[in-house]
Image (cartoon, rainbow, N blue to C red):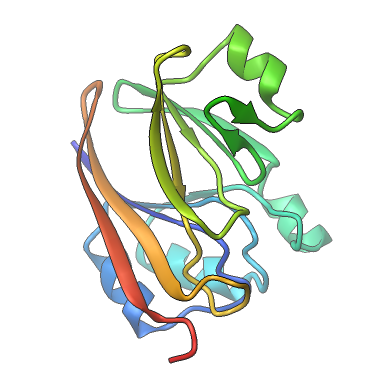
Length: 166
């Protein structure tokens, strides 16, 4: 069993509100737009981290993190990318592959909009944790926390950090 903290779109921002939740996780997953690598370096000092780079990330982030990260966690096939779309509106970058070989859990960021949807056609769960950084149009900073237990995804929680201006 693993407790996962899923975040995205930090845009170089990390603070004690985020780190408090990092400490309760077994692993942290970052779905891109990291910004400054000090964000991921800080997280990696505390917990194992999996991530992908996003469209704002520089060459250093792109050397450290892949564009697509497909892996097994416990018994769950996970695919994480930054720009992925959502059920019935997958981005052209992933559309063909996701139809051909769907994961059990598809994660992306980019939109700054928290969204969790089940794709009945592909039998997969889609998650976008929203944005936990302070840059962007979102009003509330958000993350997701959940448990992967063998081949089950359960105990999903939305974490609202604060208004992005505070």
